Length: 231
Image (cartoon, rainbow, N blue to C red; front, side, top):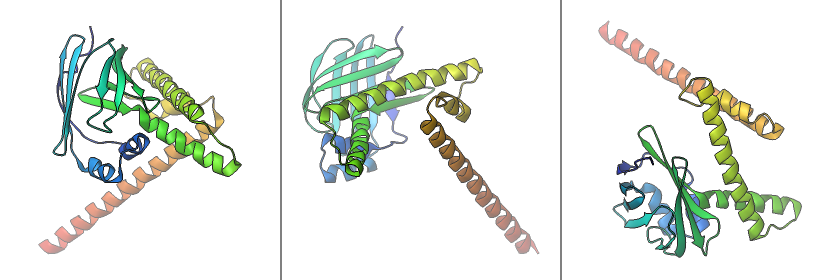
């Protein structure tokens, strides 16, 4: 029995949306407007048939499809390009591949708890391109578009593998939440990745300690002010 995506979903947050739009070649003005919008997504699901409507005060976009059947799509909500689109189930996730002028494009929808998640694949392609550009400048080498697309696709597939392994680690420990230690464990085979994650973990822990210390200081200050006002 497939997951039921039906409902009205309001955006909570987004990460690297501008990077995704840059990868699609969307103009500067729209890239600056989009992050300020609060889209609402209305999904109607009837078995394998979906209608997804994304609504904002700026523009709205509706897409209807049947899982497993390829169709022609014009991405009116983004860059107005025509592409051949195929949406399929991958476990409990909806995975979309969009074939057209922009390579390595698509999205993945899944539900965690009471939240709907959306990952846009072109953002990975954009990030891979930026990294390749930096390396090319440092080492005087060039990366073809095909190589960048292959790197991005490999990164996406590896992230899927990591996600499944992290879920398995949490289930084995009888937890519903993936922990920092799970992430460190999954990176153990790569020294560079392991060091990066360890440093990032320490950085985040320090930020949390600083925030806690700051909040404690504010509470003490308020208590002192209240005592002085009573006196």
